[in-house]
Length: 364
Image 1: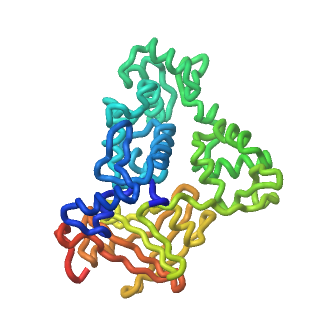
Image 2: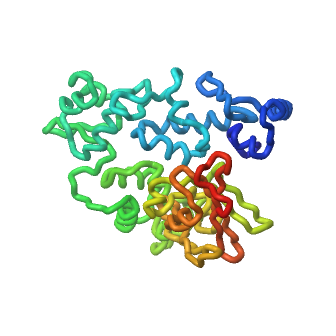
């Protein structure tokens, strides 16, 4: 528990088996665990040694708002908030700093209309007049103009009078396929730059967030000079490995046994055969600490190969659709991926509770 922000009672029940839950609860309380509180509401289905770690994760999530409705859970997972926590319910609480507005986006209570305008304009991808923005967010044009004028995320284009996001490139003179291409172009032209100067020049040319800039720094083409400026390896900068990301709750590494294991749920994307986004902590533990890098594991029994990749934007493993089908799994089922690091082999196991999962068979 010292390494966990919170843990669900359901997960604890698998180890501390007690049908009534009375003995387990007494033991946990005796060991100093309590139900954590969020926005003054108690999470009775979770336990924690303290609230500092969870509070810090939630505050980080709030600070990075706003979010589209389908972005909140993914960002929470990346930050380190376990999937067992219903983040939508937590953020819907009466005292939560975030609120789900009528348009279905998560905005800050203190900046509802400005956050809604930011997401709407980002989705449009083109300059818009205040009157058009105001209709989209349900506010008068005058109030919208005043709000955008006070917010550094927006910039008015003269003489047209339209509004754009400050992070958008000016003048349309640059055309990059992604943030990494833009960063390499800037460093090629201007040489090594401080993080601040690089960020300013990138945002002048290409819409990019701080987190995306940070991701690009693990590229095999990017490094640091002796005075900590960011530059290109080909121009003398020295590459730096990615720092160890936060360990997710669903993963464990046993160095003595040479095992790395993690749990996932079958999603519609997995059943379609898509690649699977995984925690960058897993690829870091595999030694993939720059991008692009990859490592191949062979599935025991079938001989099929699964590729683990670390890119600047995400960590992934290739499709495991066939493995889930062979084990009789459907959407919602849980499975464990066990990697044997010495031999680069792996197994995939169906780990749903047989008493609950209707698709679980004795052979899987």
